[in-house]
Image (tube, rainbow, N blue to C red; front, side, top):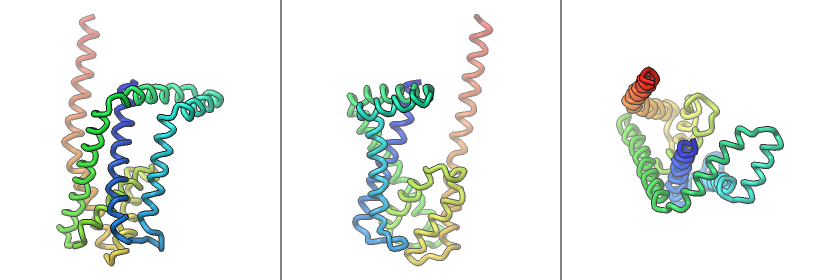
Length: 214
């Protein structure tokens, strides 16, 4: 359980860090605002929240305070899971090479995600500088991580329109780009879901065989 939770948290944290690095870097180079708010400020807000979240996970004093709060509210199950994550991440801090590798791979994956959206945009005749996608796509992916809708449906389309309208694209083109991107992700996820279902079925059969033999 500790390994599973630690791996999941590390994967999410590395992905978030990669998105923030890409978006903040290019937002600082482009003067783009939405409703008068520079997108660089939006990324800085996300960075602040990200650092506070990591502070809650890694700082021992903060960790003790949160644990005490959870126990006082009789939330021992949540506190136990947090202890597992804290223990796993604390041990992981001693393995800096693994953390750096996780971040670099996440950076590559997030850059590829931007390239996918850019190619999809070219396919439907949306021509915008690649640097714009390096700002918009990380911001959209960061926003849809907030579980407001199922798999970001609806929120994603609204964000595509809100952002791409700032550079002169009509709602039809922005929403079309969002839908094309979503279906590309959906189609590429199908092979993985099939392999996962076969793996779980094989694992279940192995357990049944082991019980029968015992």
